[in-house]
Length: 263
Image (cartoon, rainbow, N blue to C red; front, side):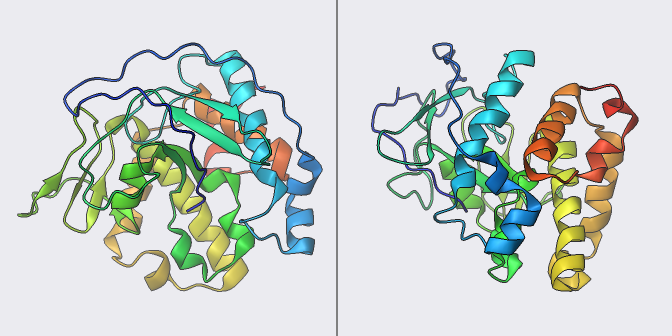
């Protein structure tokens, strides 16, 4: 998981509290050379995600999204909480600032009260392939604690497992057993990211279905989510911006009729 370390100032909230409204973020200035984030460049230079310049291109994605979707752009994947980001002085990456701090994680580390970039398709299944690890189509800002607790758990629909449920206040996402159950609003987005990367991993790395979908029924779950929760204008625009940076589409989004007229 790509980790964007955070500065210290966070507003503390209890687990039972809803997300509050943070100050409106000011537009960030993109200073990265986005030409280094194309598929061709990344393949040629075998980018290492720990030092690649493409991190700063996230500025472009969220700045442009914020212009068209100010109520949706700066929200984390799992809980829909707003956050703001600011450039860190002396660093070539992005610092995310959540609007509140979640507590009592089962495995919380020193930076888990902030926002990370989450690999929807688990990074550990890439066999250390840095090209796929840095694919923006698979990266979403997410509350660090949930990102940590999720680990490599697969996404699924609730199936009444008899085990302790890990909840995060009024967040719609929870973890139970060896599965993570995402909030209703992002099931389609998660499915399209997962299916896209699975296709890429199969073509690029020759990965087999049993490693892409450890439980065979999960592919059907994600296929159903893709159909039941079609792309929103926000998701269509996000995909288009990423395509402009990386040079490749996520066809599960770009080929959908909902995205036909998104500019």
